[in-house]
Each structure stands twice: as C-alpha cells, then as structure tokens.
Length: 115
Image (cartoon, rainbow, N blue to C red; front, side, top):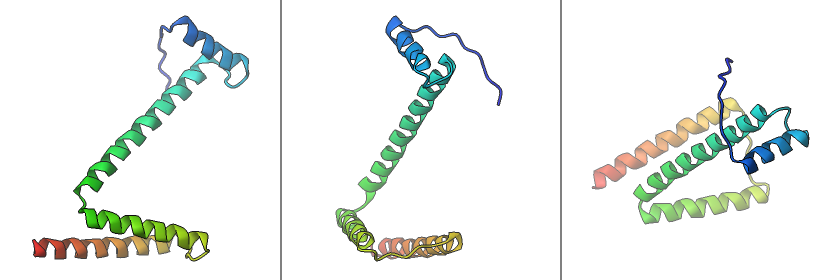
C-alpha cells in the first residue's frame, strides 16, 4: 500500500501526547499514533452512520412491530443464557438467511395488501 506523506501542525499539548505514546513504547513512531487515531475516527464515524440508518429503519416500523422485536430479542437472550440455541455452519446460516428474507417478503406483501 502506498504511503502519502503529510505535514501537520499540532498544538504543543497534542504533540507531547503523541511523543509520550512513542516514548512509552506503545507505538514505534508518531505516524503510527496518527494512523491509529484516524482509524478510530473512521470506526466511530462508521458506527454513527450505522446507528443513524438503524434509527431511520426503526422509525418506519409500526410501534407494535418494534415491541414484538424487542420482546423477541429479550426472549432470545434468555434462551441463549439457558443454553437453548442451535449453532449453524456457513451453509446453515445462508439457508436461515434465505428463510428469514422469504418470511419478511411475505409479511410485507400481506401488509401491503391490507393497506
């Protein structure tokens, strides 16, 4: 992967912080510290975007359906804690995914007919 060189200006407090990370042996140089910080920023931004998308999706669900989902999740957590679950291999996960998608499509079609 090609590396692009950049010159950055930092306040003395931030520069000391970076030098301290290198001096403590947590990083081998200042560039590693900055790359790690940028990676964390990217992860935070991606998580924020994901939460926003999920929030928009949840907002479109009817209240009753949101409550059904919450109850199902709580029931699922209790089942897992009690050891009532099934492990899937990759092929089983694909099959389960197809079944869930098919069920969701049927539910949406019946909901559209009712409207």
